[in-house]
Amino acid sequence: MRQRRLFEPSIEDRFQQYRAAHPEVYPALVQYAREAKAAGVKVGMKAIWERVRWEMRVQRRKDDDYLMDNNFTAHYSREIMKHEADLEGFFETRKLRAA
Image 1 (cartoon, rainbow, N blue to C red):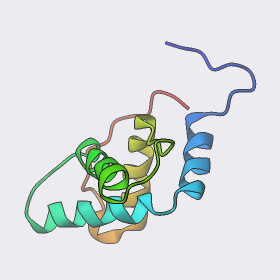
Image 2 (image 1 turned 60 degrees about the horizontal axis):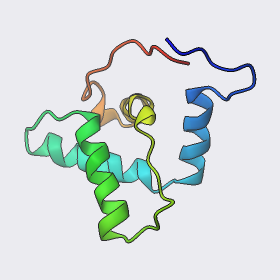
Image 3 (image 1 turned 90 degrees about the vertical axis):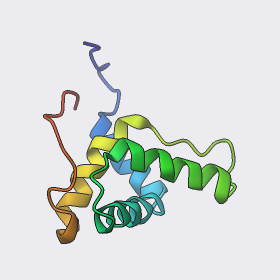
């Protein structure tokens, strides 16, 4: 397992910075999770993440610097289930391995 350098921000810290810099991502993830739930489809955060990535890059024509780090999917799924009562328990989670 890779060890974090002494002053390297944790994934949680980088997630919080990303979320603050890109507030449009959270509501898009919630929207698509609710669509899946309404359709009776159990889908993982990775699939929803890729749909949002598509929307941001292709449909909304975000520039090439608009990156969505795959390391944030676990954090977003937990945040969504914590703050969106109708999506509580919607995503399968495992113990976080990296801080």
